[in-house]
Amino acid sequence: MYKIAICDDDRNYRQAVREIVDNTDMFEREKHQFFEYENGEMLLMDAAVQHDIVFIDIHMPGLDGNKTAELLRDSNKRAVLVYCSNYFEPTPDGINIGQPFKYILKDMGDEALKKEMPLILRETRKRKIHDRRYITITGTGRVSRVCINDVLYISVAKRGCYLYINNEQQKTEEIRCRESIKELYQQLEQEGFEYAHNSYIVNLKNVVDLKRTVVEISGGIELNVSRSKRKRLEEKFWNVLQEG
View 1 (cartoon, helix red, strand yellow):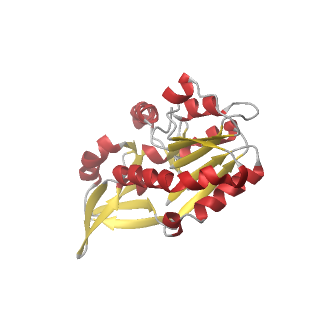
View 2: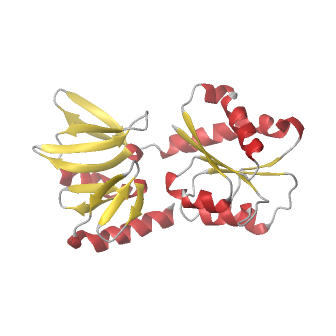
View 3: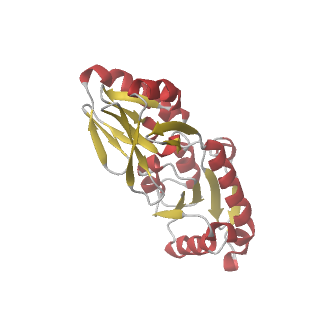
C-alpha cells in the first residue's frame, strides 16, 4: 500500500494529481491511498501516517511549502517529496532541508507532471522495497515471514505470542506464533519496538500519540502504559521520531 499526500490549496489541482497517479501504468497495478490537505498545517498534523509520496505546493497561505517540508522531515525522512508550483524560486533551505526529489511546474494540461510521474513512482517503489524488512515466525505446521513495518504490536499469549498487523486491506489482523515475547523483542528492539507493558511490545514507528498512561497506535488502537515502562518508552519514541 502506497500512501500519497497531496498538499495544495487548489482543489482542482489536487484532483488532477489523483487522476494522473491513477492513470500511470505502474500504479494501476499497485494499491494506493490518497490523503488530501489544503495547507501545510493540516499535513503536519497527519505526519504520523508516514506518507510515501508528498506532492506539495510551494506557495500556500500560512506555512509555505519550504517550511512545511522542513518540519515534515523531522518525522519522515524517507518520503519522496515533489514540489509543485506555478513558478519556482528554489532556496538553499528548500533544497538542502526539504530534499525534494522533483520540482514540477504547473502548466496547461499538467504535461510536466504526467512526464515525470513514472520516474517519481519508480523512486517511491525503490525506497519502499529498501525499507521492507521481515521477521520469521512459526506456528502449527507453518513458517511465515511478516513485514516488520506492518506490525502494530505484539502481546503475550499462552505458549507464544499474538502479532497484530496492518494487512493490505488496512485492517488489523491477528497472527498466532510460538515465539516468546522475549525472543521477539530481542530481534525487534533495534527496529523500533519497545515494551509498553510486561505483556506487550509496540512498534514505535506506528505510534500516533504517546500520553502519560496510554499509547495510541495506527488504526485507533489504545494500550495502557505501565509506570515502570513509561520512561524508556518515551525515550525510545523520541529517538524514532528523530530518526524519521
